Length: 173
Length: 173
Image (cartoon, helix red, strand yellow):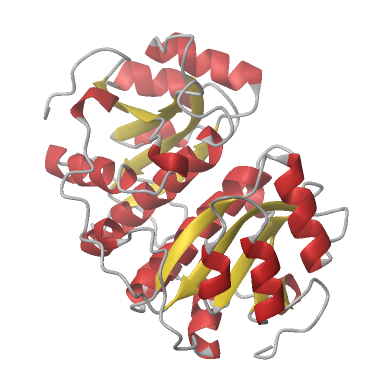
């Protein structure tokens, strides 16, 4: 598990091989196994495979182009009425589970930020016919990787870890 | 990995056994292996083991009592100047990695929400001497579990998955 967490990298090039429905189901199950504040589970998902829709999503901003090549794009939505305070972090935790479940299945994925840019959210809302009551956190492009990226050698940054109170060195460091 | 994701549950009772420093180091490494928008990596962490500090954190709201019993509490902070738009989701993804890395090591953990309640954040800021420039997303209590919670039998909710456009059934469902 710890190795898989480090092996997960943002993959932006994909082969033409489709992603099996059962694999997408496993991603969604992992996403919905995330914790959520007071178990409100505000998340919802749209599974996009049709090329014209993915092309449209690829055009919403400079860094969403991967949606055209990836055979599956998952839109991660949330209902703020379910939890106005915590829907962003709940949906983010679900997204992280989704990325890890992709890595575990040998799939590549990348988190494409949408929230909190109103113009990005409006574009996704229009393309996927998302109702007003839901917010759009992000898109996740998923596919079989056509590039390899090694695990980060050393994600740990000593300067960002503090002991007991902020600014005190932590013993291990 | 998929099984571990489902096995992760919020654990609120812990034994007195301490958590090894190397295990805490693995949690922090996993957290810092999370994706972040534009690789800004806005997260920072405080590792709290001293009982008086954990007692104080246990008192900040009704659902933070686990901080007293858990031998380690990690405060997840973020620097909004590093990414004003995405620090919440980046720090949330790091927190989810942290919880999964705890599960992978046989440790119990629970995500204690702080953000976006100003009074909770002010309390953590005072107790841990967090500087004004940083925000507090949450606390994570970590310890050896003194309760067992089975994996969620079925986290998947059909009604929350849509196909191609919002409101269309997804084929697998």
